[in-house]
Length: 120
Image (tube, rainbow, N blue to C red; front, side, top):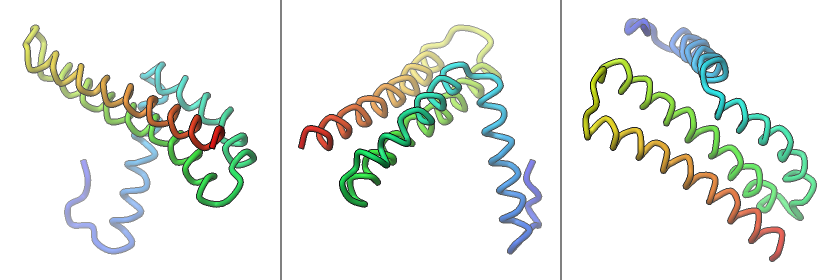
């Protein structure tokens, strides 16, 4: 748990370490995240190469970064639901489905951006 008394640079350093721990946990426990990171690493150079200017490169790369971002949030939701929801519950299922929908939407955004930029 975060040190609530930390301020200034110490707070930023702590935040950095907590973020790295979150990346590690997601990479270790979530296969979908590992797959999305692999896709990001494979497509990132193409986004930088195929973009004709800074704006296009930012759109191509930024849209790719949305996918693992959504996956991290989805995984966090699922972890909390699994932690507190041992039995089936409509709200638990809804939360997990909404997290999954966010990941799907982020993939759709990335696909659409790439399609529009590369065909435009």
